[in-house]
Length: 430
Image (tube, rainbow, N blue to C red; front, side):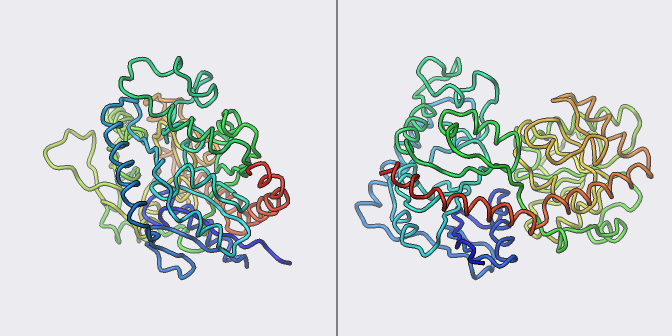
């Protein structure tokens, strides 16, 4: 059987959650006999199927790109959007779109492309496009963490009369959205969302409402590094206390990222301390902050961790993984924890209900009720037999949903559908 040749496009192939998810999708396809390659700007793996480097640009292109970047920097300084995570990346065109069009692949699989492809570059791609969403940027303005409510701008269109109150300066979100609306009119992308929540948002958006949207989780090598390691050995390896109840939390930026909810975790743990439940926190993604801090319990800081084997040790050492995100798609940390047999406690938001079965593999707390989150943590920790049952169910769920073969088969079907619809898609885009 002749499988489609696939080229994944991502700014990076490692370090960030979206980049790691993109490389895992590529690796899952290769593992199952599919000709898959990656094109990235910043290569961090030793995968010889990953092509790295920034395309050469002419001097006029470099000057145009620099001037546009400076204008955007100035405009962002004057604009107050209320979104700390904001990436317009509508820079001047580069030669990368031409390179991608000349590539021998059958399908282009887009991922997170900040500073890599402009809105116009995406419009100039001539091959069938499958686009995995790792956040809300593709169907919004410049927000990667957009508000989700019935009157959200991505559902109505970005008009002059529906901007959030109290946002001074230029309406960059509207400018970016209008650029997408004009550039991508008539185009057909096959949209993939790792979670049902983000798929629903895409389907209800003005930009992507007419496009096919599929739900496919990010794959994980559950029979490789992502397996349970005996807790005693994991704690010795990481120099963690052998007999304490350990709560794990991790994210890029650690406790500092507002949408990751580190403050909500600390509030939940503080309530456990008031209930005389002795716990200790283990944090990865951040080193210990300077200065004295009033923490609700002892904290072990693992710092930034890029080695998957060390992360697997951290998950296995913990009694429970807490993902207190205010908004999240299908966070790698929750999926990885489950694969290592660690129950997950999270808020019932975003894509987390796709991962956590309430009282089956963990606990889904009411958003953003820190007392309910504290109750969930206690529920997991207070009964050893229950925790063992949750651990086995978490591992079984991860194997059934995220195994590379399971996910690769779903992607192959989407690629074949994209190829079958390519003539209509390309003629509409002319």
